[in-house]
Image (cartoon, rainbow, N blue to C red):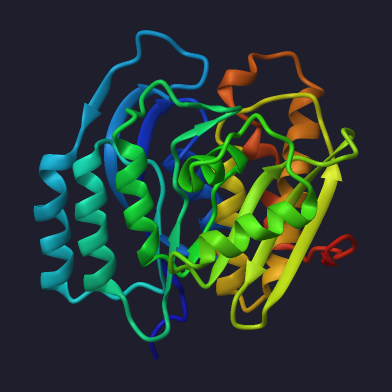
Length: 289
């Protein structure tokens, strides 16, 4: 009897210090019973959120041979999940990977990691943006934050669009190819709240999960959110339930972390909350919009 364990190919960077990317993705999905098969795109001494003088080693040159071995082994994945890419050339490599490992039943998830708070990350060059606009055509599920959605759509991230306008953003991103689009950290007329909104083309439904805005910033929360959502979907949950599980878990991690006095650039205290992913989630706040 074969083990019934889902497998995710995770194409992300690896930071030696700071809870972000693979250092968050692997434990989060593992806690949900999912095997993570990492494909590192770059190795950093720390992540780039709040640290200076970090070392950055681009792994573009190893990726093709790395994946060739996977193909030789005949590996199959229930999800191919792409995040931070270390160079524009990697967008082309990842596009080929997604074509090679796509099946009729698996998920292709792209988190177009490029920036936050209205600007590009310091490790992302401007020429990554048009490459990412092309790559998202491959996605089944696209998970940008608000800044990244604006970059992909050539819109001003400093504006404060209404909810109907944000729904148009979702539809416009879906028209590029992804059947499901989420935007995290979406602005809200109520400044005490923040939205995660989603569009599912097959059902033509729009969803919203709102949560209290917590005035703290921790790198890596987008990676954790997307990982919880993916794990939830692979467990058979619906999209709105998967979104709510992600939002609730991130909120719990942030609230726990704020109660301790340590540098927020280290990321949320994920280790203290992973046990929550092994239990059920009380669903209470998703809305159809």
